[in-house]
Amino acid sequence: MVSWIDAILNPVATFKKKRKQASWLKALLGFMVPSLFAGLVAAVIVFFVLSVVAAGLHALATLPFGSVTVPSASASAFAAIAGAVMFAIPILAVVAALVFNLFVYVACRVLGGKGTFKQQFYLASIAFAASWLVLIVLLFVTAILPFSALAIYPLWLIYAFALWFLAVKEAHWP
Image: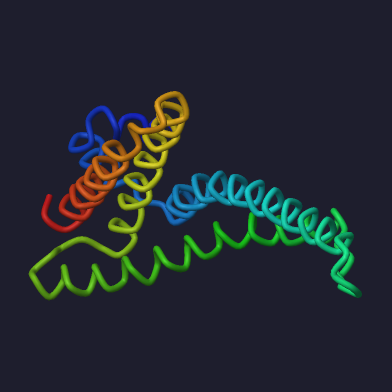
């Protein structure tokens, strides 16, 4: 967590320092922890949406349209779906990060990059986690000022890409 905050405050120095400390476990955690938070948020949204849809269908079934059959849905079924979403997102994030970083690694090596895949993946995980910490703060800002999201999120995407670019650059061209 400290290196994630350091990557926000001083990314170049952080990536330079962490390059030689590359670890598969820390890299996986760097992708999984923020993704687990995103999965939790998505699970809550999925549970809420499914509950609202079920309530709407139940209300529709009580209208005098004749015989409308609505499947019975329980909160436990919604919780199971939401739980599956919550745990699928971190797994999918790691798989996507591995595949994406593999393509970038090959391209960097073709262009003369000297880093290892482990170094690149680890530094990219720090950049990913740091950009998600910034996003969490921005979520609270946009909750207070909803229309600010139109300006803030595109800037966040640029920031996240720049952070990732600095990580890849440090991994291959220190």
